[in-house]
Length: 165
Image 1 (tube, rainbow, N blue to C red):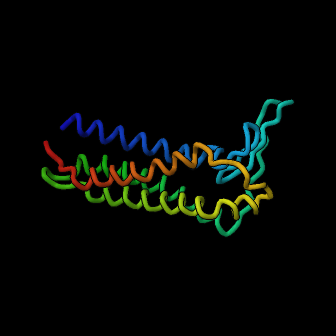
Image 2 (image 1 turned 135 degrees about the vertical axis):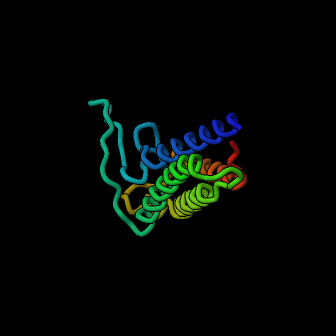
Image 3 (image 1 turned 180 degrees about the vertical axis):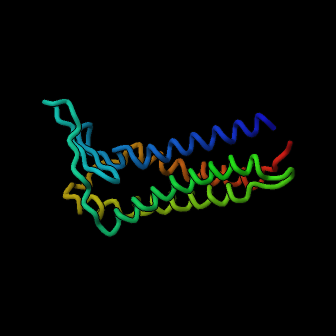
């Protein structure tokens, strides 16, 4: 039982870290090694100063919901982790971690919706920022998609996990 609790906790922390990186890091769309875009900024690497120069991404009808959904995914996953810790000490023996699983499912759905919006509407989002959409998806976009099945799997694990002594 201890091994199961440690592995579930570590999985949750890894997923939470991946979600946080996907939300905050600057590579949802990449044109080359010196120019990329994310949910919050459009950045360009300046070789003379060897620093990233970033400008805020222009808000549009697709970017704002994406930002909100990714932040909600992180918040739901944090809430889920806190609920797990509380339930670990409060639940009586034999009870299930339903609240924790429900929060993980909500995080998975909001992450899925944000990724789907970006997949289908990245041209609109990048066009409004004044950049050409010719490029490729960055690692944060891929991390966000990887988090979806991991969140669903951990939600299922929490729902089926019984508290034992």
